[in-house]
Length: 365
Image (cartoon, rainbow, N blue to C red; front, side, top):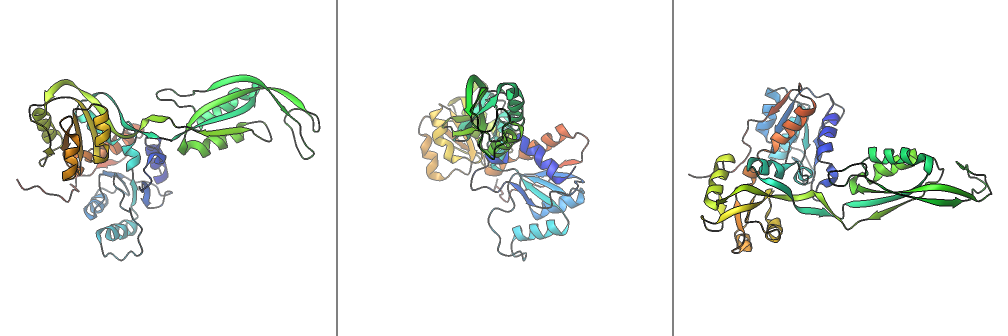
């Protein structure tokens, strides 16, 4: 397996097109053509993690947080990021970051939190908007199946839990080939009437180029007529945070005790009374305070996240309890997602979970 093969495997689960505009998911360091001898899965990349990769003979690190987030004007070792880059390059270690693309899929960071809390009926808390297009094209009837299949193979035609979705209507197309044309049917200089199928398919924004190329390659006409329409629809299967229900309602104090145990969260901050009954739970790994209004709008009883500022704790009012378990604590199981994703596809590959606690924060007990 090459580095690029592992990346392709991961981005089938969490396409990079779902990352936020400010992000730097993807291959941060290394040659995508290098053969992979072993993989180390981690939340953060630190100098200790690089040492661990060397000790475990892993030349690919899969991390949640990008090690390169802002532009570098020099690499001299003056800070930890530059020292990591130097050590990784010197030892031919590639570093891949699956950051907000893994935040924004229903099997990613927030799904893992929901799994740990045994939440039921989970769904995306704040679905992405303006991420979908509709492709409309016109195909000779006998070629419609072939063209549809090419579009589906390229990533078009997914609607929620269904694939190969399309709408097809029959009609008549007209055209006349000019002097330099090479018509698939009909004759140059003579208007032609052709029975055609109008094919309509939904596709995600990040698949647009691939789908169009597949259409052009599979379509028999010399000049392919097609339209691309941006849609205002939300994508219910991509977005920030998740929400679900506990099997049985419980007092907030019991949920806090579970969070302390499961996430080893020793510095929990929260609002609301300890006896408040909790059933509907919203979550967001990392810095999720921007989703407080979404949690309120969905009627959640509690919102669990990290990095909440003092004044943001007021935003829940009496309706929503806000629980801050810590940035690291909420995202620590992301490395398990990388591990499980690779092992599911390549069960005999050398994949390791990092044993380094990368959080720089300590709590005085």
